[in-house]
Length: 196
Image (cartoon, rainbow, N blue to C red; front, side):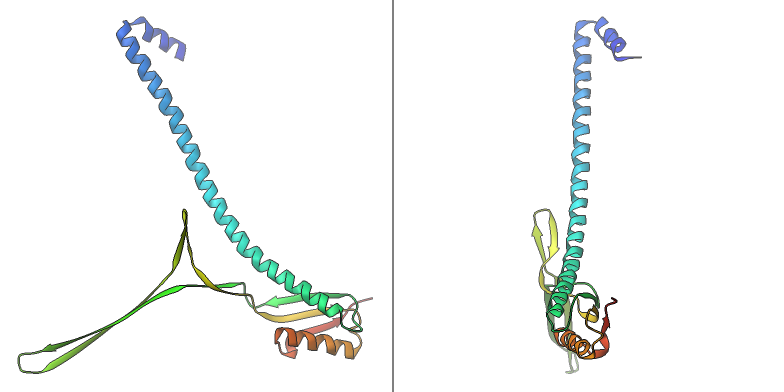
């Protein structure tokens, strides 16, 4: 049965019932429109929240990747300035990713109670409570930990491929520069001549 037939049946009855029926149909139509808009806005809010979380994760990841790329570029530029060194390619290995240290609220307490028993003896009870919570900041609709310190990834090894590294003095100068810059041991730095 289509809408036109339903309306004709409703209008064929007396005027009072027609008015009531039309009002009911109008209310149902309004509720359908409002319900549709509510579900659309809820879905877009969830989508926005999900995309916001994804952007934050990408931002943290790209921050670490950017740091590593910048460090490699700085080392490459520095090594190319050494006498006897031509073009340079550098690869740096890191121990782990960036580490963030949140602020912590420490709640330690100690309470001591003394009890006397009927025979004159004294019993002392000491109770220690240790607890800590992460401090959280509220930024509108999201809660995030308060970061007090950020540790950049630690360099654990460097590989350098350079023109001029076939000369032992140049190879030594490159190794020494990398060892001093990153506080590494000599066995963590590998220098190779670039193929011609």
